Image (cartoon, rainbow, N blue to C red):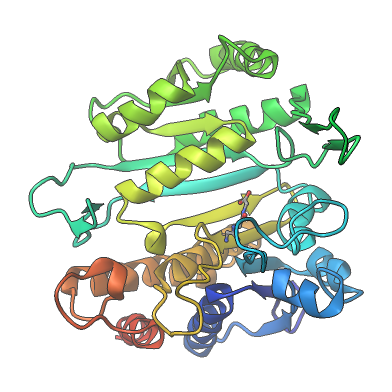
Length: 382
Ligand code: GGG
């Protein structure tokens, strides 16, 4: 923090990322007015569409702006390739806009991707395309901690002998002791610190792996088994990712803190997002020891982009997480209080159920992105 307040790097990215980032900025302005906290925004154009225009992920100096920011907000990165399937790629085979998302995670050592999954009051899950009328599990309240800098997303690999009959594509999976230890430790610490408890009242860390097949997973499990005895008050279990995917839907109340390597974490957290009412509500925090980057779990949603209909609540909740993280880091109660108030304002709008985007209503006119944010800001200022 500088004497002028907090410096935030805003990375809107592509598609609806740009639309929801505008809403985050409105919310931050409102928090600033209410708390006298001063923000300095560095808004950085980036993403796949930026790449198509400029031949690079973002302008020179953007990496430094992220490095010096007190916190980073990210919208969404990625855009479909013009030739149909797949995403726009850079010449090195990485997704266009990579620097802003995976690059930032690696460069800023944002080693944990923390994704809370909580079914909030007033929210129904969408099943077979319709909002559920009957089934509503109680007490869906868990946190996923996904290793964020290595695994299958470390960017090591490529296409060998392209064009020939001997073509081989490889993606190397990197699992290190350091990378594993720090997310596993964070999982146990989170389980210990969390308020509320899973259905059976037992604090628990669930490790999601495929250790019957993969060396990296066996190693991850062995690291967990070394660390677990330091937390005798927290139970732990090791589950195979395939079995976990069905149990998560069958018995979501069982789960408390779930820890996973990078790609498994990416996939199972989207199942988690459905349990909390969809991607419009799911937020993620990329956390390291010195930096934090906060984003909605959803992507750029090209089908919905430019129509002003995207749900801004995931971005707003990510912003609340950023306020909480900043406030805790700088011992600034104005921000932790604002974070709680912001989460409360989102819940109020959900419970009231009048101003909701298309993903949360059936059979009546949905509200737009801006209207929902206005409703949240109004509750915030009450
Ligand atoms: N806001 C999430 C987002 O932009 N996702 C795009 C994406 O491809 N993410 C990969 C990842 O989260 O590892």
